[in-house]
Image (cartoon, rainbow, N blue to C red):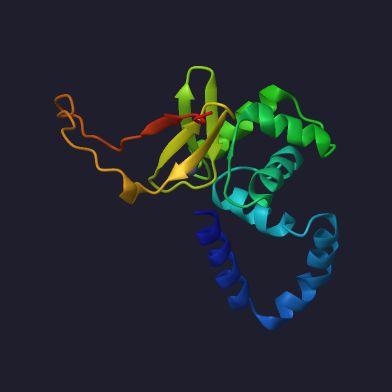
Length: 170
Ligand SMILES: [Zn+2]
């Protein structure tokens, strides 16, 4: 989804008249010094209906800067502290929920105490590696679910999340 939005942004940028591009170029160059992904993330947050506050931008930069990943609120909070981003754990939680509600992240719940946020928002399943408290993707094609119950009357099944728990054999 993120890449789709970025692509839309690039298309829009190409459609801008040349004089407008030249006028805004110095502004963009100035922003680029702060963080190279800044202008892109700002657009992604705006398109998702979220105001690009400094904290949201800093968190989005940490979340999406490392490629596809599954991250807990606590781990993201620790990363923010290491990166010198001053943000409370409650704000990290709220931002992750807002990103999820905007469709920028998917929530993966392993149990009541373990929730991860996934940058891959497509339908897929997970292994939970118990020794490492970590989730990794299982491609959807590798799982066949048979005998699903009928949804309660008046409802339909939206999706099925499978978490397969594993640990090292030794
Ligand atoms: Zn995943």
